[in-house]
Image (cartoon, rainbow, N blue to C red; front, side, top):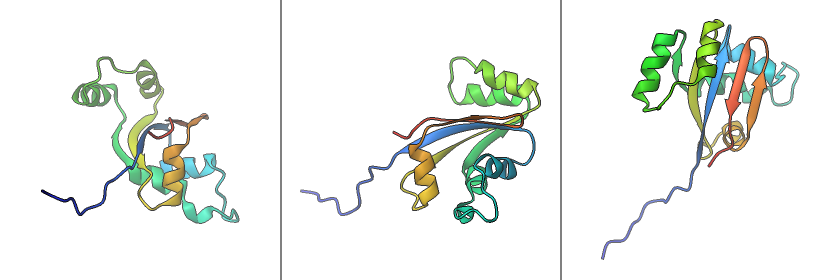
Length: 126
């Protein structure tokens, strides 16, 4: 009989898509209203989005190649539209077992945000 002596993970993850014109970190911090005097200023949501972004593309051919490689049946029209409008699009994941309170919060939260220079789409974790 074999006995497992490691930890069993019940962690979850949640993917996100961010379209941005300009510095991603600054735009996210601004969207989350993280000012220098804010009590949560040290959580740095912009840095977390930058660090957790795994793939980025700024042209439609880059996106179509990525989309094909990920096995999606059809490219998303909204992403193509964002790229046509000059946005850079980044995708990534948050994990609830990272030990980072903000990352856990973002993993488990639904976020839909849109401004002139930033679009965030993220569903709650699973």
